[in-house]
Image (cartoon, rainbow, N blue to C red; front, side, top):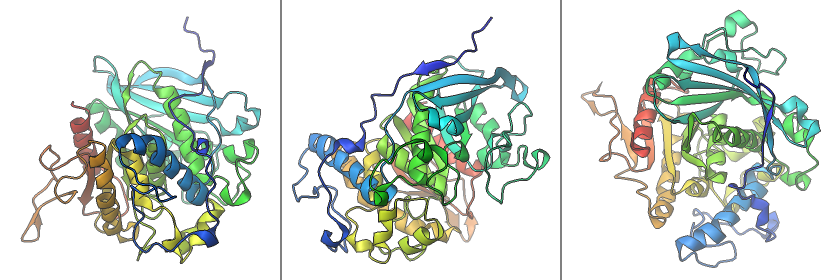
Amino acid sequence: MKDHSPWIIAATLMVTMTRAFAAPFPAFDALPEQPKLPDPFIMLNGDPVKTPQDWMEKRRPELKALFEHYVYGVAAPEVGIVVSETAPTQTILGGAALLKQVTIGFQNLPGADASRIKLVLFLPTDVTGPVPVFIGLNKCGNYTVLGDPAILHHSETWCHGSCPKTLQEGRGMKEAFWSIPYLIDRDYAFATFHESDIDPDKHDFTDGIQGAYPPTAAPDHRWGTIAAWSWGLRRCIDYLVTDPAINGEQVALIGHSRRGKTALLTAALDERVALVVPHQSGTGGMALSRNNNEETTERINRVFPHWFCDAFTWFDGQENRLPVDQHLLAALVAPRALFETVGLQDTWANYKSSLKTIQAADPVYKFLGAPGVKGTGIVEVPWISGVPQGPAKISEETAGNLVQYRLDTKHTLNKDYWRGILDFADLQFDR
């Protein structure tokens, strides 16, 4: 008989916590005006970054700490995890996939009982050997991502008002969004959990995982919801890289909108992420804070005050005082793959600004020996006389490992995006 008792995975040593960078940072009044984007190769104290070793050992830790201090907040330390089966593993999708459902708890953190992650993992069956995995937060619950009744519905979890009110209404409502059968057919695994498992998306710094920890920093620098969600994603990676069905060298993250911001932050902090897809992530994600003519820093902080740390509000209308901007967050992903997916009708997410992020991060990619941008960095459907000649082609000729992929859509995710995403992943993972 299989042993269903919990098992423990020690805290990872692969992620260096940013607070190891101990240099004090300036108060807001001491920060200089920088209308131009901060130079990736100049340390905060003015020292130049001359070698890849300088980047990895000096600039990278400094940038991680700067983003925590001024933008996202200081997250809690890494912890060991305790994993148990939520339900027995079973075959779904007509035998094409295995469904695993596990609960991830946190070792020596009794106050976090309410914040345990209920992860659902879909694995292709017609494969030999471990497979790549995409991980993404979902908005309304695991049961919405696929219509199979075997996927548990955790009705006690807080949900957005826009989420379905009944099991019948919500079961599988986001199938087209996540396109799980298509991922399985392409021999990719997919893992997801409901964001509220870690932190409900509301203005309350005491609920979720944040309430289980003593303060991680001074009040202005406490971790916001995006940092908390990122912490949860990293705990999922802790588990997934131990699963023999998963290729731990081919872990990919995807997120849409606010969850795209989270995916990007996670990839910047955690070098186990081989590929990240920040999808229509906007301000606080791939779009720059400086000269943003769509969602400004002031607007995002006013409407979503819990996403970032309070210190980020210092820069409302004064973005030029920021010692970082989002090109430096993208640069923290280097030399690993970054595939930004955008919609041409989704102007609020400001894909024109995020293209500037890609272009400004590219020198770091090339400095570290990665392909970075090829050509303009854009891959999109060609149009002739107003008629699309698609689909957009991903190949070694059109794409490096830093790309903006454009489709003519609004603020959504669908199979057409997944086709490009998996073509890009195939290219990066030599599949």
